[in-house]
Figure (tube, rainbow, N blue to C red):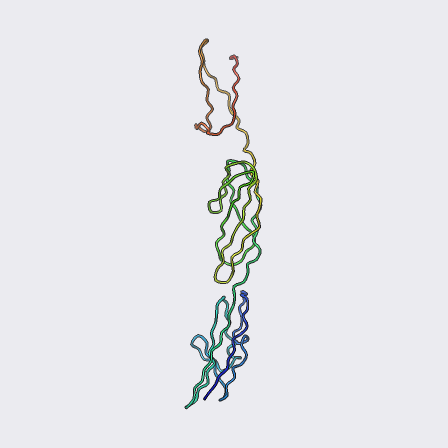
Amino acid sequence: PVTVSFADAAAQTYKPEGYALGNQFSAAICNAGDVKYYYNGTEYADLDALKAVTVTEAGTYTVRAVYEDATQYGMAQASFTINKADQAALTVNSGTMQFGQTLTLSTTGGSGTGEVTYTVTDGTGKATAAGSVLTPTQVGDVTVTATKAGDNNYNAVTSAAQTITITKANALTLADKNINCKIGTTTSAYVYVNDVMPADAGALTYTAGTAA
């Protein structure tokens, strides 16, 4: 009977330029004569011919070695696996923001097409993240980490924590406002910003004076 021996190729790690498939295997051994190779439905006369095939995605690729004549047939198959690669290091870009404003987070590094998501950890400050937008809720420091998801060719990666400082908002400058009040009566004074009374305006003091 015909026997064909064809060993699996050593696994490799993904690289963008890919691998020549014919370079990965050692020639099949057949007791009846030379074999032909088949990959993805196409026949190749030998491994040199199979070198023209470049595989460029992580995954497992199967090649068949076949001997066939008028009366005999033998076949063996072997596989070549490309494992996912680790991404380049991912860094959350630093930033400082004022309370009352938002900060659009961004990253440097990473690899592939995976989505970036952010996680906020409160410290002396507090903030929330919606997508890539950081919104402060308390002055102080928070830390942000980013995770870039894996894809077909890369594993997921998570950044080191980046400290973001939330500073106090600039003080409001309030215009003078005349308030009429009769002697012996009282009246209330209110501060409005853009026609809205602030919910957290801080302590306000008022000074009464006489009209010029």
